[in-house]
Image (cartoon, rainbow over all chains, first blue to last red; front, top):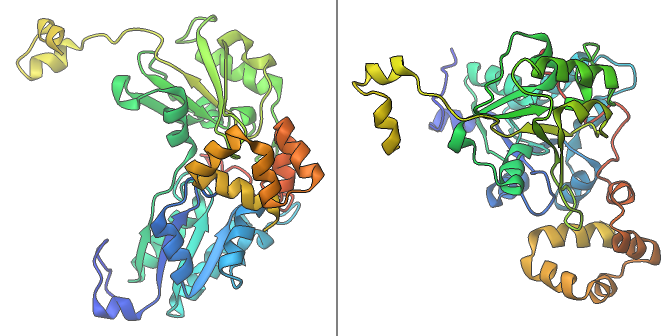
Length: 277
Length: 71
């Protein structure tokens, strides 16, 4: 009977079994990958990757035996079937007792379905699993735009999910909407911006924000010699803006925070106490 | 990797090289052996071409696509 291994713990039995470490290559090749991630790539018995062609070529120069799971994508093939096949390939090697590394673009745990699922299943089977964090687009965003999510709080949603579910925005906090170009697409088949979808997103945002609210369309720099994008425009100008698949919509805090008397009362304080904060 | 890809990767990881590139890009490109087309692409900071020539956008047609939060 296999016994689940606590996270971070490594028993002699567990070390003899297959394992998985998931690493991120960052947004910008060479700039963002951690020393540990490189070490994991070099040390793995079996190395899988799902990344762009540039990073793949760099990895292949270190490890000629790297297996790119991109080959499992195919035109017209349901992506969920592709994910299942990726999952099965990775888990199969772990169950064969191999030390497996999966290298992914950006942060390996953000907008990444396969690693979370395979880690969960491998963990349940008693294998040692771990994820090494990577630099993601949100990390670049805080640095490039000078926005501190700890200052006023932050909300973060995938744009279409924000649109079609009952999420609510808090204009006193920073709002970040990912994949805004694909807003309104429920088919999972569109990879370009459509005005109607962005307009629908703007319509929802107008519940909390005035039409002239300053927004930022952000794209992290993926190549060193090119700048990041930070186009500032009004909320009502968004439908006519230009988008790439990975453009992020950022709305800085648009109003002051308001005191919560009930929360204050629960700690024996009142609004005057906030004047000292 | 090609000379262009190697230079781009090194510019990301090496602060001294990036400073040198900012001061004398031509000398750095010469040292890395970039061909005329890649040099011109870098001079123009042509993002679309850089993405293609670096391999950043070279994936299968359905690859590297976004994951929907509701999938």
